[in-house]
Image 1 (cartoon, rainbow, N blue to C red):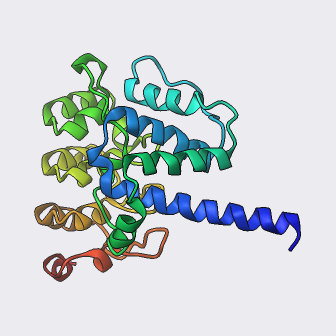
Image 2 (cartoon, rainbow, N blue to C red):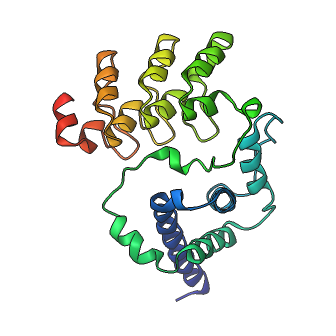
Image 3 (cartoon, rainbow, N blue to C red):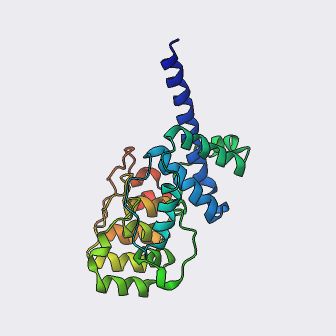
Length: 240
């Protein structure tokens, strides 16, 4: 076998292990502190995108700034090194992660918000529109929307819209506020998932009923071709 073939095979193995490690993190993220999450976030972005290629967030975007710094500080680290360091980071957290990841493979759907690496505590004056949505503070959400209505359809740097965050948390009042102020009920995130995908996967029955009542489409597939109905439990599937 030629040297280039060996390198290609080695890289494929690394990529596969990295992919499994990132999936494992989805099941254990709630057990990690903000420092661990930010370090893994930076390595994940370096491995999947390459060196940081986006401008520094504004000073008031505290969470985004922490995440940007974790990525930017890796400089020109190669994607292969970033993948290897990411895997090593997971192994330091749990040396037995591979066995546990295999057991969790059958459960694809999870509360996406746990993967946001947003565990950094903020003062109220530093919180953004999305921060208030994540906290479920309906009064603050309405205050922001009244001042800047366009926020309801503005995605974050990960491609999630405000409606996705509210759906993920099951915040019916906030969802109603967003929709009544122009949010697209069928907005898709970077994975092609709609708000209905989120509430179905999280078993928010009352929110499922609400979204269906205002025109949420249950037949929209995500990027993997999966519709909300295909991930619904029996009770919710009957509604869809």
